[in-house]
Image 1: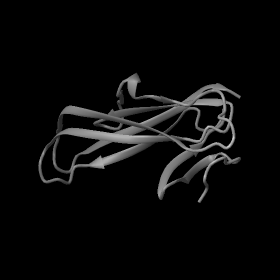
Image 2 (image 1 turned 90 degrees about the vertical axis):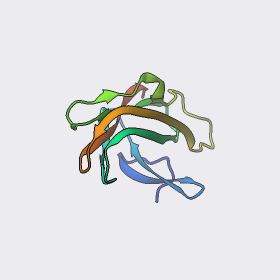
Image 3 (image 1 turned 60 degrees about the vertical axis):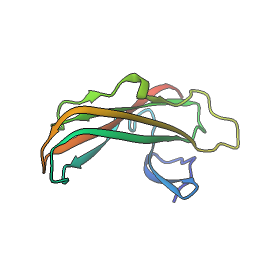
Image 4 (image 1 turned 45 degrees about the vertical axis):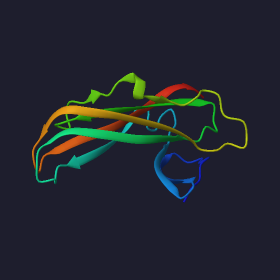
Length: 135
């Protein structure tokens, strides 16, 4: 399992340390720019879901002089997506960290209320990313 500093673009299961494995991307200016991961949630609770508490952690291995953004959006129909708000965005620094580089975690959380998600219905979370700057 890779631990960071990948030279090949792609999607990886990164070992970020401490027994934690993170789904991640090694982006370039032409790969995953823009890009997205979509998580489909299915209500199998036996009742109507009216609220969700979403918590997630973005892990950055900042070994290159390139900045990328990550934004969380949500949708009830997997067609129209609503951003959660810029305060939840994660943007990596444009300047590379000094060696030795290590994984840095940024946690985010938000509550989504006013839902009416019946038993068996789906709800979608999407993390979208893009280049911000650098080379």
